[in-house]
Image (cartoon, rainbow, N blue to C red; front, side, top):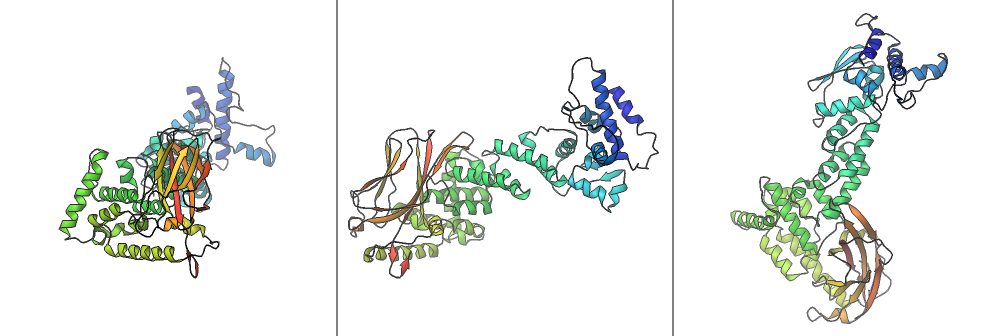
Length: 501
């Protein structure tokens, strides 16, 4: 490569320093092409052809096409151009300084970047400067990431270590390198996990990668309630947690009370970032901390204290109606004194109104159901199928007398309106058919939390008679992978006297 470097340097040193040539871009490209040609001519063993190196020549030097061809940047996969022009800076016509580093580069290569193309083609003073000091507007950009981003202008492909993908993405976004941004997105897709999902989500939002943002959000919906990860809870921001808890797509394992418990642990970690310990100790330590806070505030609900007010928008997304319907859960909520009593009073009042509505309204005409109402008001519950064997669940609570048993057997999901268990004296479940809207979702997750199997149903409306058993999902011909998570959304449908609920 030493002889090649001399060839390239000789084409530029005849020009006095500080006087850029009008045909400088063509000289760099022709010099680079001459370098690659000489490598091919002097090599005794068969090597890559000019076309393989990404260099295309056209016969003739005149005309519009000849000029465009001369302006193409010489890149190659073997690394000779990268080493000569980028690493050694041979025949450089501009020096870039940033983050304590210096790069001797070439305008014709830099102009592949929208950032530098605007800088050199406009009326900016940098257009005629030989040394340019770059200011980094993004603190995520470090020297190594900038080196990778600038080097990508001289290469066909760039290796992006997952540990550096976010800093390289930041540098690529600043320099407007669409190809490198896309490559960063591919690395992020392949490496999303509990350790990276939150940083990937925030970065994709900042740097305009909507597909990555959607993928990370879905990962969190699948894993927030299914993974026992202290680190994951630490990294979920307040705004992101609000969106997750509000979503009907959240994979809730067991019942809504478990969502409340998870939120309490998350809030504790946000307030006590120095806490360390095994995950099994997180809930006991959380309860102890909130008990102490209750004593210190003389019983004031935590969300009404100065520390707790910031978390109000998140806890407002809880579906409290499906917590207070269970007596033990209602007692725990009251004992914790996290949620203000006024919130619970409103829920109890609405529940009492609904009980009377269920008891008194006999009209079973068709009900118009708004899908957005289903998403925002449905009960969220779920379970895990560890293996392909028969099992059943009953999500207990005062659900207006509806005792619904969900069973799995022979790759089928069955609903059974059970009369074996009645709540109180109303006995509404034995009087007439009950209408429910429901949706089931299934997912198998690998060790990194990525879905390897997914199957979702649409919302359906079902009228269940007493002791009636109905097959609602058949998974017989699906490539199921165990263990598998099943998430359910239920909404009891009751007609009001003056319109649908």
